Amino acid sequence: MTDVAGRFEELAKLVPIPYPWDTREYIARVAEFRGRPIVLCPIDPDALSGTGCGTGSGLWIARAEDDVIMFGAETELHADHIIAHEVGHMLLGHDTSPADPDKPADQGEDLPLATLMPSLSLDAIRSVLRRRDYGTDREIEAETFADMVMVAATLPKRTPSRLRSTFFRARHR
Image (cartoon, rainbow, N blue to C red; front, side, top):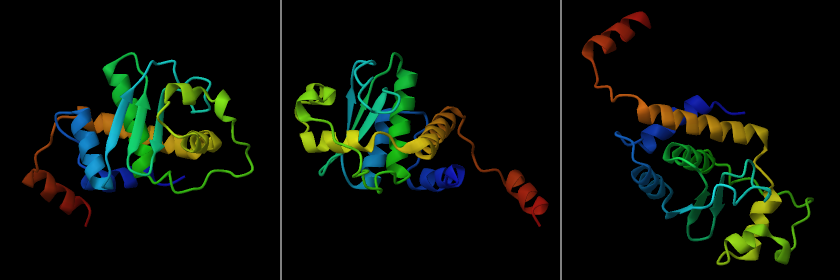
């Protein structure tokens, strides 16, 4: 597992977290950083359960021309966390490992996601399902990333302090 806190600090500089928090503004910043649009797709909270999509509350699909984040949540705060979790997968580079070719792909007519997303190609759906999930380490990384985004989003904005800067320089000599 990587140092998520260190990566988060780097990524928060590259993709600043809006203050006050605004999910759409954050997604716009992530999309600009990645150089591709991100489509947010709210769905019924139970729609992804039983599809092989991890916990069943969110799903990131990296298509050729854009990214789609599907999320189902009962509250806005939970939706924000699910979205941040999927962004964590994106920014932490969890799309760079290939799907496991030894795991069988599901058949097209039996794919629950084919009904949920008729405009998505069966190959894209099979790629998501073949992945099964990101594995324990990557799920923990994405969840930690989401937690850190939500904490950073709720903390009051700190202004630079000459006293604090002087104090930390003196203590770390």
